[in-house]
Structures are given as structure tokens and as C-alpha cells.
Image (cartoon, rainbow, N blue to C red):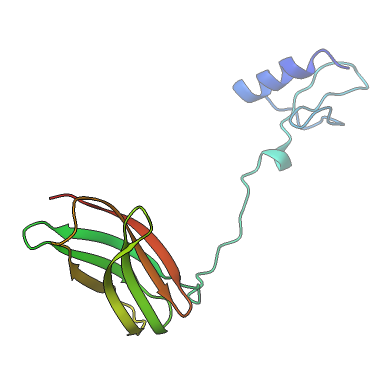
Length: 153
């Protein structure tokens, strides 16, 4: 093992010394001439070049997923609004509100739903429900989502 390899690496990196006549490489970035046993330093340029990554092509056929964008509660009118994006049309879909015991306390929507590029809103009044934590459940022919809602007035 050559005792000059770590020192020569530091010297090559910090000062930028290079010897283009080096005959072999002992480590990834240092070349040492073994014939004369003198530490000649050369940067291994193929290893230090900037990596060229292929450009990623834009793929406009990316698969969209259905998701609940957000929930909001208008405290003045006690209206709970669930905003959703649907990736595909649903032949049937129901949006319901469950308490923490798993009991269905409010049906918000039942019926078919068409998918489009916009966000859909589903609303219901929740004036008859007490303050607390609830689960919004969305079930459809190809979708099943859930989100938590905290009702606080």
C-alpha cells in the first residue's frame, strides 16, 4: 500500500495539481508513477466529469388518481363541504360521515358521479351534529377514500 495516496489525493483536490504522464491509477482520483516510486499526481478526469443524465420526457398519459382535496366547515351556516377530484366516472358513489364509533351519522351524497378536470364539491348541513372528530368516507364503483374532519363551532 502506498503511503502517499491519501496525501496526494488531498493535494490534487485542494491545489489542483495534475501530471498528465502518470502511468497507472492506485485509487479513484490519484495516479502514481510506480516505476520511479515518486508520487506524481493526476486527476482521473473520466471519474470527475459531470454526470450527464438523460432528459426525462414529459408524459401526459400519467394516470390520475381520485383524491379528497380538502374539507371545510362554514361555521356561520354549519355547512360541511368536501372537495374531490375524480380520476374516472363512477356508476355509483356515496359520500357519508361517520363518528369515531363507526356509526353512520350523515349521508352527504348518493348517486352517479362524472369525472372531469375540475374539482367537485359535496355539501351537507351538520347543525344537528355535536362538535368532535368525524370520518368522511367516499365509496364508489372504483374508488374508496377516507379523510378526517373536525367539527368545531
